[in-house]
Length: 480
Ligand SMILES: *Cc1c(COP(=O)(O)O)cnc(C)c1O
Image 1 (cartoon, rainbow, N blue to C red):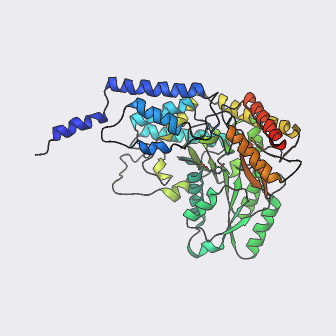
Image 2: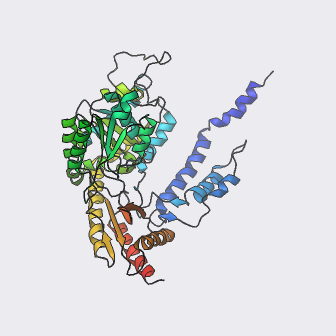
Image 3: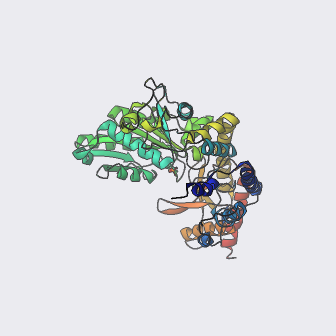
């Protein structure tokens, strides 16, 4: 006979008792505390490591390991490799943060494991998801009919919006080859991915000209749409970027919304980076017209400083997400019929999901909205400060005045190729690790980017970045 009691005894380790829990928590808390204490001194980039290769030498065993051993691995081989997104001296790509309060939400969500996909399974958890969605919708000026879904990030949120737009316009079969999508060359590459996954590779894609600030030229958009109509095509979707990843430029949303409504286009705004700047007055001004979009993406894991795994898709009319994603199955019988809340499962491709809403809600409840608004205003003003200052450092030239919190710039060396010089400058800065910057290509030229979006980035960190850049450029120029 099988010894079920023996199995039970072995499986008991799945449920630590109070003493064991305290032991684990004490060590984890001490580790987290130590990590947070060291952030002000820690590098923004860990160069010259083996990238955690030694993790492979520590296999998962039958017996399990002690928490101290595991935390040591985490410290050496994970947390001290690669880019350090928790540093306030991190200016690469799109910076992130990881609010402490949100970590409490994740801990509690994992302990209580509420099923936040369906209302009947956890009415309270679904209400929290919906309260967060409503709060985000209010932040961008969406009205009562709006709804949305918390996704794992901006890429999945953009995919959801593309699917909603596809179904709203019945873009399928033969129609696909006549449907036209309007973007600029600065649209995020996840939109091309989204079109591909949504089965829309056959659509015609038009890259609309941009102006000197890398914003979509609305006249060019209107002309192209009119030409396409004339040619018997089906102008379908215009994708405006509310804060491009390259330069933080905001396409002229109000103009685009007028063109979209005049020609019957679906107007999607990708605000994964920039959309939530609507929470502060400077951002609200830059984002005028965003409330007229049919669908919108925002990334709380960027612009609300939350830990990774928090994006959101919003639609002006909830019917469009519901139409694209609701589905029925015999094994999911809603126990209650008179449901006054939409369930995330009816508005997204997911069924079982992480209770993401809790980390957002808890952070907003505990901190309140005002510090977020202040931090976002601060980022915009820090970018303006960075722009004015770097412009005045000998040898540097700047790109357009920042719409939000990204500044592009490059050094013009007295001799030699500027692209190669700036590549070397970036690498020298990265190797040193005090600050982290990244680069992009604009109009065929390599330019450096200063993206300011960590809640830990303040005036001192920006000054330090300016010092490092000035100093490294001089050293390189002098051939040191
Ligand atoms: C970051 C970003 C995305 C992708 O979002 P993820 O959360 O990384 O999936 C899409 N669009 C823009 C404009 C972005 O900045």
